[in-house]
Image (cartoon, rainbow, N blue to C red):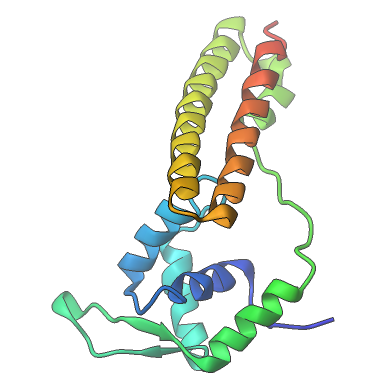
Amino acid sequence: MPDSQINPTAAALLGLLHEGPMTGGQLMAAAERRLGPYWSMTRSQVYRELPVLAEMGYVRLGKPGPRSSQPYAITAAGKRAFSRWLAEAPGRDALRNPVALRVAFGDQHSGNQLQTLYTGASEYHSEAMAMAKEQAKEAKKAGDQYGAAALEFAVAYHKAALSWLKVAPTA
């Protein structure tokens, strides 16, 4: 089995850098735009991974820009590592849902607390689903069938969460 020696966050950064050199801030924006509906990355993760990727020879630093921003570009070694990562088994999902965690302790909630929890979660999932649908539509229009497919996963996830919220116990 191939061993890329990179974690999913590092791989996502390498994948985004295939589009061209970017600063950490630009990578964050690209990650939010392209991956946000189904994959989260924090600013601290991005800025922690970039020096590691540079040390491994997977990215190279460009000339500092305004406000000491540092663009990164993927190297040939980085492209090879990314290809190895793509060939690896993806592993298991890491499911962490803060609403489900709170529902697990539903006996300790008042009925009003649960209803407030469900209402907030329903609003969030409805908005997120609408955004992911729109992004998927735009991706399809742009001819990005793979990006659209990943966004359809986000649509299905939010749809499933909304279905679950309708039947979750309230008391």
